[in-house]
Image (cartoon, rainbow, N blue to C red; front, side):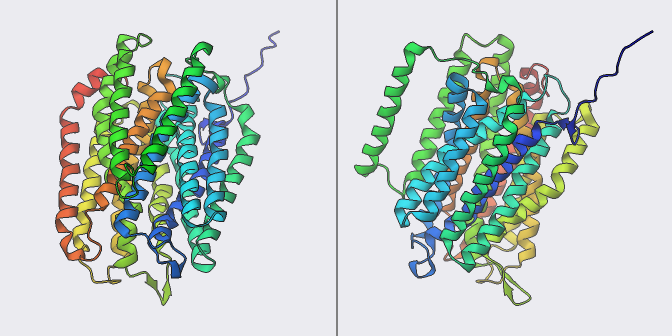
Length: 488
């Protein structure tokens, strides 16, 4: 008589591995704190002291925001290196989230420029560590060839944007009601909630998330420490000598990020630890990297140009009630929440017949360019007269572009990653975000907030450049797919 028992069905999260809920949750709360803070950051910097701000010039402030955003993504290199060489992704993720929380605390309780400096540095480094390692862990939840991967990343992206939606609403309400520091304090509370949730679920993550893929030999650890100390000392020297200033910070980040990306590609491609197939896949990633950088250089202007536009030109009056400016930052996440599931279901339904990664990303770049061309319909509006629905429509197009590029690029970075550079390949993807975000701050300096009627060329050339780049990626898609060696 047979005593065979049926295996227990795998517990899933909307058809995805159950452990996805742990990363979904911590990233949701981290994005709540991150975007909640960022929703009021630029306003805090350029609002006059009488309104609770710091009174920084708008162009300098947008440059700092762009540089800070670039610094967040640049810090993914550090977070990824620590994971791949010293501690493993799971541990780095936890302590990076702790650093984010203390950064928000600094913004909330430390005075003026001291709080701004300490807070942004801690948040940039911590958020970089969270980003790279959370993405890497999600990738490790799937076996090679698992067709659920892109859908899983879309759900993960939904968690990111759930936090991004609620964060600016909550901090914006506190900022307008009680002041900026109350908003920053709420961001700290949100990150604390994420840490509690992660602490409960982290033990159930797969064992490979704690593995150090390419351990650093003990004999070299002292050298790394010395180089780190020298690097910090050099930065301090450049700041105090006036070489690095608040007005040129975005340019510095662009140069450093471009140099780091080139160096990273050279190191990975030249490594003896990767196979010929892995090397071809890294080469295939180069045009995708360029498309991502172009996309982020426009998309991240939500936190610079779009914020200034909303503050100066948008009619925020709704039936006699003035909506907080920061709430504009929650429009895009609303669409993400509405459409992430749709895109995830679409990719799952199409399975192997879905468009390839180069096609998705090429179309996403084109759509992002179209979104900027749509600004031409409202670019010259008189102060506080541009219709809110016009911006809502434009940000809807932003969302379509984002869903064609951001979760797809996260997914493909894990699929193309060489085994020895698993997390660092994700960090390389985030370098494209660092480059694009820093460029967004630099480009925002070309936007004339005092004379909006002069901004036709700004929106037209930005949009056309993105469309042209997307068309190029579509034209070379077959060559890119050949280098991807079976990965789509």
